[in-house]
Image (tube, protein in one colour):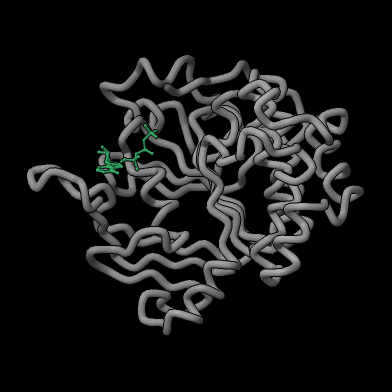
Length: 277
Ligand SMILES: Nc1ncnc2c1ncn2[C@@H]1O[C@H](COP(=O)(O)OP(=O)(O)OP(=O)(O)O)[C@@H](O)[C@H]1O
């Protein structure tokens, strides 16, 4: 799916009147199948940007276009169908605590199913091999029949990512997918997510606090600051200086520095983890 933002601004309904808009005058085009990482300090508007792309909140100004259509002008049925092609994966996946992992993963397919098939799938998992294969890619095959509330936070986050692999969506909008993972797991998980999106030809937009992971695994990086576009560059052009400007007065969120040399290929050894938080 192609995603285009034209001078988009957005304000959260609960925001104070004195608070600036969470996203301001943002123009951006993400081609179908492209992979983009969004970085920036806390409060920069990264999550809001994903919510806008996912049609979870309407813009207050400007226009969003998904495959050329403005979703907010579509009839309700068409908007619902369009939302079925969008996957917004929140930082903490909404997994019912008593649910089995297999059911939670297969729930990724629900948007493509009718009502009865959905109910049947929730009661009796329909494609256990597919759930197992998705979990295996995140090193969680042994948790297939475990209850979700018996998993660690990091395991739950990976179950959420395995569910993404089964989703019928053509745009994956993934919010801080690595926040509960250790550095090794984080790299493994992002590699799997990026590969999965490529295999499915899905557009992937991920917000990331780990700047080094973003630079190593995504070809294009968008820097957000105070709701505005600070830069939109190929990963190799995101220099230490640019990052210092992006995180100015938020240096505590950017530990270390950007690689001085061009970003390594996916799978290659990467510099020490830069955690932003
Ligand atoms: N539900 C809400 N109601 C009111 N204001 C909100 C809401 N959600 C976010 N905001 C405000 O919008 C701005 C952008 O927040 P957003 O969550 O998009 O930033 P972020 O870059 O994702 O931050 P973080 O990295 O901490 O998750 C912030 O000023 C925040 O306080």
